[in-house]
Image (cartoon, rainbow, N blue to C red; front, side):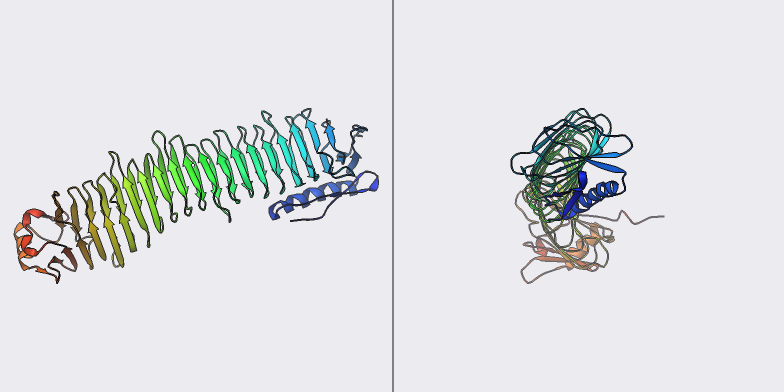
Length: 477
């Protein structure tokens, strides 16, 4: 966005700055412009022309000095200046302005720069603000101690922050930022490359195709309309959002990933744990533990540690769980699908248990010994290889029908558990005797409102030895 930026220069002349900034930067440009012009208009500030030949003019006491630079070249400015304005002159295309301010110590300087051929700022230990409205910006504050707020404009920027606490706001250009050891906050709108140390770093990404590498304890918001950002983050970090991105959590730790769409998320390292909240169509590869809360649509999980996943209406999970840990999946209301056929560990899989809710849950287990628990509404269970346990509890199973697809799977010792329906061995035998086959010849057991269809097995083929019954919730005197 082009806005008009003018500064009242020395001897009453007007300095025009080239301007191309984002809407977010516009207020910072306007504020700094007004501060300088109002100071000069009221006599509290005074403008001084600084040239490569004329050098630094004497600055009287009692006024706020504003240094005006319109010539290309290298400058060593004293710490007397509170404001520095860098603009185009007659040599606008002949070179950049280089400010070597390593003589500044522990004071604050405001820099308003709008030069097409760019500006280079080599910082000392001062703090300050740079608002760049045009051209490329290079800022070198490595190993210094000041704290800075920087607006890069829409040019390309190369920034090495100080070890203080900094705030960086990029435009739509291609920016490279090396973070120091301070607590830094970044708002990115371009195609940026970020590298940071292990410390608390806060990054907001609104652009696309950025490459961000941060250490431990990072906080990243990948929002806006951007996509295809690549994030590599240390342990104990939180990432929110992202579209078609790539996320890697390194070094283990306790991490959180929130939202995100069609992205790939990896985590590894000793004791790695990822807490996933929502998300839509993401793919996860976790070498460690994870909890998944209400992910939407197609979600693919490959995990080697303990897993707990809680579905959402319309979710379609694929789970490949391995290792020595267990896994848990709990369905929500509505239509859901779980395909865990690639899992090698035993999973505990629960259909929706919300009383009165409507649900249709289709679940497939893997080669481990799975526990599949019927609930409210309709379910279709395929246990897969292994010795599987199909469980029904009157406290959680009401209305609807559960279909068991592979109860008679060769080589498996599958069982059906029926709890709290008041059955014992004798009454179970009576239930089997009174049950009927459906039109396809499959046994149908009716349990006070919830029915079980054992596909491919007739009533005559079922025996009480294939069942567990009990009433653990019934209290006796």
